Image 1 (cartoon, helix red, strand yellow):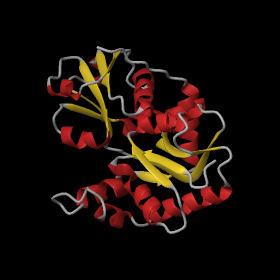
Image 2 (image 1 turned 30 degrees about the horizontal axis):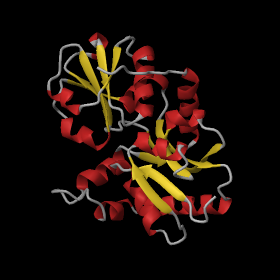
Image 3 (image 1 turned 45 degrees about the vertical axis):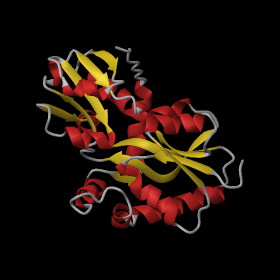
Image 4 (image 1 turned 180 degrees about the horizontal axis):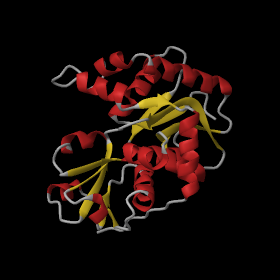
Length: 256
């Protein structure tokens, strides 16, 4: 284990409080590697990182790995940035195009298709987002992350997956959790916890120092982080993860 650990985290708006804490807390010495969710998992699995903020769907498959810290990327209501959009009501959807950036969102979509929407669609890999510009009857599109903001209001129907999960299970959801390899010292984990706490307690400062200030001086970003994202990995979210993992949903989209 390197003396200075490498931490990989998601490079989206929803993680900027964590990133702010990692960069500004004075107690943690670590190298930071930012990437989309799927690449975070790859970085960790390939040994490029010792600690990671990983998509929740990946965690059960990992060996010699523990969930650490009291923090996550979660939602107790609408998450806003994990949605299925369509011009067709979800119960009549025949095909769902899947954003490849988050395996958790893909598997969650599969869970909801089976257990809430009662549909068995064809699953397609969305390798080119241009498909969103020419929507077809019967098609729906799973999109995640910051790109969702650009498509809000463009489709007749939009289904927030955190809301749909809550309607189906009465539980909140955790999309990503912090993990570390066995052997990472308790001291490093404690320092990470402290850094994340610092970030979550300084959300406005995180927005101010980010690229998300925008034309509204960061108010949209701040509202999203304080209203849509819940950072605490509490007992209810642990229960939600167990239910999600026990369902054993495995969606593998085909290339088009």
